[in-house]
Length: 199
Image 1: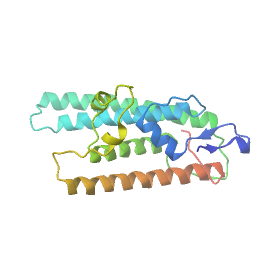
Image 2: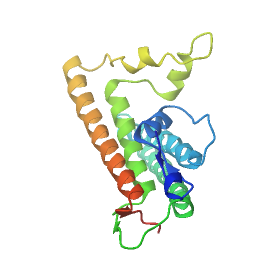
Image 3: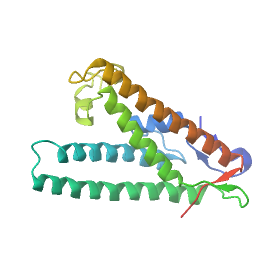
Image 4: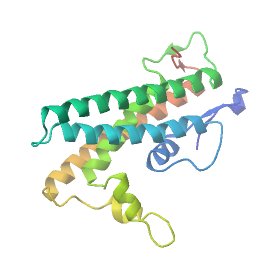
């Protein structure tokens, strides 16, 4: 459920944590007022996945100095894409969410908050051993649907089970904390107790 501003006469809503996490997992299919936020959130996850792969390639044992330089360039490009997506979210906030003077100013823009959640989502997925997006495409059934449940619980075989469990628990716990913080933030914005920066 989204935090609805229609009742207050604002005509806009912020996506709920559950909707945001769903957008991290798969592209948004329904078009709504928060579509720009959810679409950008999905793309932020793709950026963080690409960034993680580039970091792993740069730190690979067989990486040459040229490989490291190439990875560094890719990371810079990805970070520019992330900045554009964060700005897109923040522009939506500036255009659709009223900013009450007198309410406490939050320290981060909504785009920055969602970017941090997207990064933690990728870390949590990696801790579970969830395959990369290309591997997920190969796991589709004859009807075209992803076999998410089987994939989501698959554990990487190259690490001991206990280490994976500990790391996965830690990453998912941190993601849950960020989701709780996001819920508190959008609730306080809806109640005019907090305003989002729009710089």
